[in-house]
Image (cartoon, rainbow, N blue to C red; front, side, top):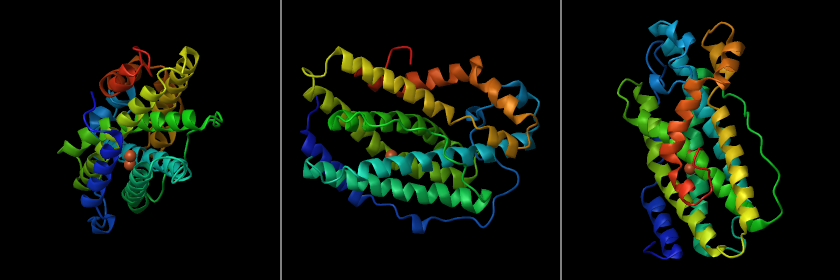
Amino acid sequence: MNAIPFEQFLADLSKTSEDAFIDPREFDWPENMEPTGWYFTPELISLYGSDTWESMDEAARQKLSFFEAVNFFSLNIHGEKFLISEISRRLFGDDSSELSRYLTHFVDEEARHMMYFSGFCRRYAGKIYPDRTLHGADSGDEELDMFLLFARINVFEEIVDHYNRIMAKDERLEPVVREINRIHHFEELRHLNFGRRFLANCLERHVNDWDDDRRAYLRAHLAGYLNLVWKQYDNPDVYRDAGIEDSFDVWQAQATSDRVLEHRLIVNRKRLSYLRKLELLEDAA
Ligand SMILES: [Fe+2]
Ligand SMILES: [Fe+2]
C-alpha cells in the first residue's frame, strides 16, 4: 500500500521543506490596493447566487470580494495560530525524531503563512477579523488527542486548499491575492500529504484496540468540527463592511440556505474523500 516506511516518508518531507524554503521577506507588496478589482473568486463568495448577490452591481460585488478575502485570510491566521501552539507543545516528546523534525518545519511554514495573510489584512484592510472558533478540551488520552488534532488540521487544510487552488489560478483576481493563494497551496500540499499518511498510520497501529465506540466518538467529533470550520466562511462583519444593508439578517439567512449547504456538500465530497475512506466521516458529510 504505502511504499516507503513512515520514518523515511517524514525524512523526505523535511528535506523538501528545507530545499523549497520560501522567504516572506521577498514578497512584493503593492503600495495600495485598487478600489475596484476582484480579491476573491466570485463563485466562491459566500453570498454568490443569493438574492443579495443578485441585487448588487459589479462595484458592490468587488467590494464584498475584498472583505471576503480579508475574512478568508483571517480565518487562516486563527487556524494556523491554533495549530502552531498545539503542535509546538507536543514537539520532542516521546515520538520519533523524524516526526518532531518534520513538525518543526510544519510549524515554521505555518508561522510564515501568517506573515502573508496578516500582511495583506493589516496593510490593506487595517484589521484582522477576530477568531470565531471554539476549541474543546483534550480527552486526556495523549495519542487520541494527537490523532484528533491532526484529523482536525486535515479537515481545515483540505477546505482551505479547495479555495487556494482555485484562486491561485483565477486570472480575474488581483495579482497579490493570486500569489498569496499560490504560495499557500504550494506549501500546504506537503501538510496535506503528511496529514493523510499520519492518520492512516495511526489507525493501522490501533486497528485492534480502538473499538467501535472510540471510532464513533472520532466520527462525531469530526462531523462537529467540520460544521465549525464552515461557519467561519460566513461572517456578518464582512457583509457590514461591504456596505450590505441588514447584514445580520443576511448572515442568518445564510445558515439555512440550500445554496450554501449544497456548496459545502460539493466541497466536502471533493476534498474529504480520504477521511471517508478511513471511516472518519460519514458518507453524507
Ligand atoms: Fe498554512
Ligand atoms: Fe498547513
